[in-house]
Length: 116
Image 1 (cartoon, rainbow, N blue to C red):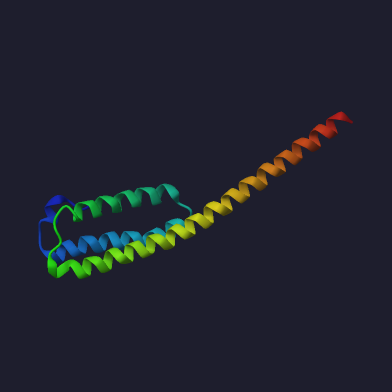
Image 2: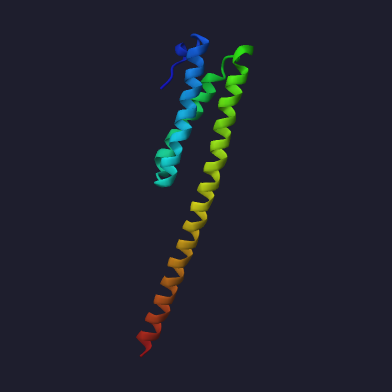
């Protein structure tokens, strides 16, 4: 994890820290595909801490373009992941409803069977 002392160092190191947040964001893809929600939550929280720490110091004028590019890529990835997560959520809801319907049918069958 990044420490505060590192944030006070050179501009290049600061950009590396921001790129670490981007790398972490790219790794979300496999976590989402594997539906590893607990690890995704943990990694998201770690990324948030990195970003908060990065932005505790002002971004220099010379770095603003590069910082904006990285942040735009993070946002773009997040939007893509959001779509994927919503699709998975919808599928999970449909599967859950299907299971509940099958359970209801099984109970109804059992009731009818018990009456005979």
